View 1 (tube, one colour):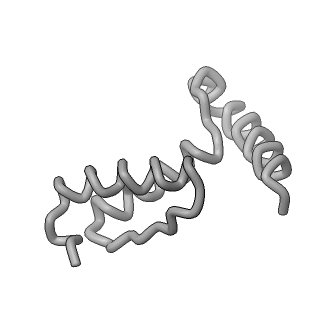
View 2: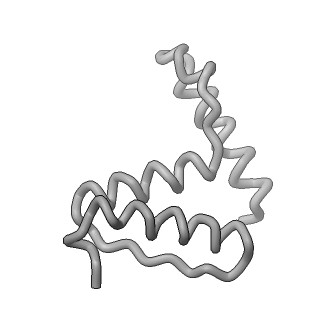
Length: 77
């Protein structure tokens, strides 16, 4: 599935979810938000997360994740 399709499907899902929960329509929800939230939940649950840093944005995310891991020392190798 192409990146644009993921974004389009997420917009449709948010629109559907916003019908019973109107506050969702006011929030900026993107694929990045979903990835970030998922990783944070995994870290908080004590699950080890590894990333591949192949491009500039991934490297930035990896640096951010490294900083977060300071708060979750049990995840260190």
